[in-house]
Amino acid sequence: MRWALAVYVIGFLEGTCAHLLDLLRGGIHVYASFAPLPLQVFFVSLAVLDPLVVVLVGLVRPVGLWSACAVMALDVTANWITNWPQLRDDWTWLLRPVGLLPITLFGLFVLTSAVPLRRAVALGTGVRERDHPLRRTTAH
Image 1: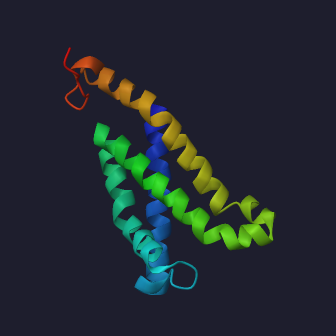
Image 2: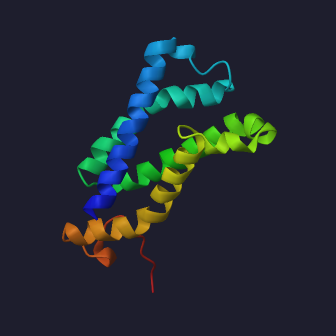
């Protein structure tokens, strides 16, 4: 469990640094040359969302895991949308060491590991899965 949480923290710290560096280099409109306005706003917001996920995951909060999933699902989707024209023209665009492939692989890791990791976090904090307050119950 700890290694997976460490991977989350490292991945989201890398994202934080990348987006902060982008903003320092190019200002608030740094993404204007290749992304539509809603995606520009999202990419800029990652300078706040990524470190928030780092804190929540670092504190081993279940909401951190769900936040990580939401952020990565949106981030992967936004990156595929903005990179699709280059990828369509040259499939090797996917093989760049910094870019779409690592973001996609990290996103898949987060999305596939979140539920088992959530269970492990619940067990590690002494909360049984069936008694957890976020679990929905049905009337019998």
